[in-house]
Image 1 (tube, helix red, strand yellow):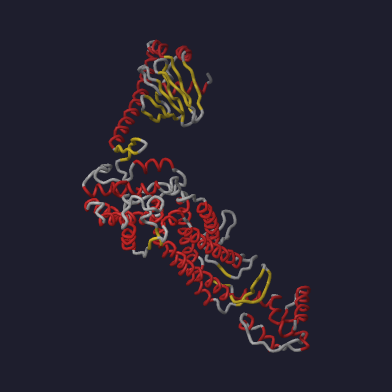
Image 2 (tube, rainbow, N blue to C red):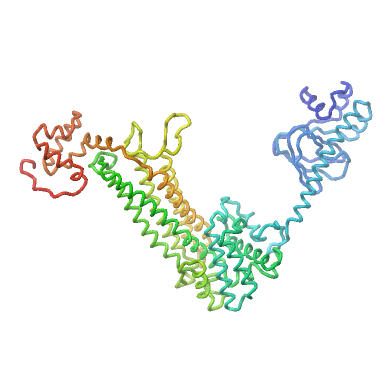
Amino acid sequence: MNANNKKLIKSVLCGDALEASEFSELTKFSTLQSFAAGEAFTLADSDELAILLSGDAEVTQQGLTVQLSAQVNLNSLNPTDDSVQGCTISAAVVLRLQRDALSKWLDHSPQTAAVAVRLLRLDRQRSAVLADARDTQAEQATQTRLEKDLLGERQVPSDALYGVQTLRAAENFAITGIKLMHFPKLVTALAMVKKAAARANNKLGLLDNDVAAAISSACDEIIAGQWHEHFVVDVIQGGAGTSTNMNANEVIANRGLEIMGHKRGEYQYLHPNNHVNLSQSTNDAYPTAIRLGILLSHQEYVSALANLSYQLKQKAVEFSDVVKMGRTQLQDAVPITLGQEFDAWFSTVKEDIEEAKDVVEFFREINMGATAIGTGINSDPEYSSLVIEELSQISGKELVRARNLIEATSDMGAFVTFSSVLKRNAVKLSKMCNDLRLLSSGPRAGLQEINLPPMQPGSSIMPGKVNPVIPEMVNQVAFQVIGNDITVTMAAEAGQLQLNVMEPVIAFNVLQSLRLQVRAINTLAEKCIQGITANEQHCLDVVNNSIGIITALNPFIGYENATRLAKTAIENNRSVRELVLQEGLLSIEELDDVLSVENMTAPRRMRKAAASAL
């Protein structure tokens, strides 16, 4: 046993006063054992006493699991027949002492008696930890309620509005960490669907007034923003959305029970399936809620695009007189105004607004009343029309019954089309942000034509550097939206027969793309476009020094002359303007007219070219 271990033992056991011979005797029935983090061990109380000298461990005895820290007994001073199972949390050192030999040694002298006192204190610490754990276990037992389903019984937290099926789903699908509650419009839409179903069933005499009223009241609270934290199922899940549907059914049922004066879980009065899910299936309630969730979110998307287009138009007007060099294939082309460049971006965004308004109409067609596969099994003949009428009134959205409920239950075409529109917009925005990054590159060694508003320091090592972080963010959002579109496409194709079980990943990706686009567009408009300034003189200098203006002279001096002058200008680092005047091809007045901003950036009436210019 090395000196460090001896010192550690003496420190933990308060054995500094021991004679060398006494400590030597102690080591004869002592064993030191080192454990790596995460290593399991077993202790038999009847044979030996174990003391955790260093590190942390978790031990289980008689069904009770506790965490113990250094300088505590891992098992009791009083031997029992119960073994202790343990696992180290961090690297640990355990001192094992043979009980019989220890007992004899402790009676040896007054110095060993001090060790006995220390052992007693360590045992009391262990007892205190175990007592706290038992109290916590007992408290937790009173904080749960027992629920049962097809697979058996489970303890559900008593403060949870969800029930046993939601609990299982939360355990089964710990996938993205993104839960239903993170999409509040979807949660709201689920509540609207359930409220509409309750009202329709009540009008058909299938649901009594008290139960229908309780369901409606619970749904109203969710629509108002309450209880969303109880929608805990992961957005990606197996089962074609059944977990989402049951999460909603259970939350609404338990809140409805409270409204009726009953306890959560007393489903004999208001049942998640028998009452909240009456006349429905996941296969019509869930896709309807997704469609409605998109309809409820859609105006935010349109408003974001409208705001961005407005900011772009403002800049188009502001920069209408800033002449600059246009470029194709990153090479000088012909002059353009910076205002024209921004106006083109305005037009492309404006175009997407109309596209977004058109495509959302697909989601007004819903399959409520289809139940399992579109045949309407377990629903009243009048239910479908009635529930859609109720849902339209509740949501404020004009909804219509799908022409073919079987087709509507399995087809995901609307989501594919909408996702494609989001992708198209993302691609356009990303291209625009690429241009913004290029035009603002510099500030000394790049194009340097515009200045983006500085948002944050750009480097941890390069002083003074400011990066185009907002356009970069939009680029990355675009990449995500494009990837999401591929997922939606593949998932829509993966449907089989009368149902597409991949609806959860379709819903997740479409809703995520929609949310990302809205946030990215608003950020781009407010934190980038609005604050852009132009380097007007620099833009003009680049145009005047560019070979690209030679194109404007083609109709007046002929293509051959223009080509020759362009080559000479490049080879001799001369300006086109200087060479035209030197050769007398045009007068200074004619040259000024041809190279004016108005004539270089818009169509003009052309006179017939002179024979000498051809």
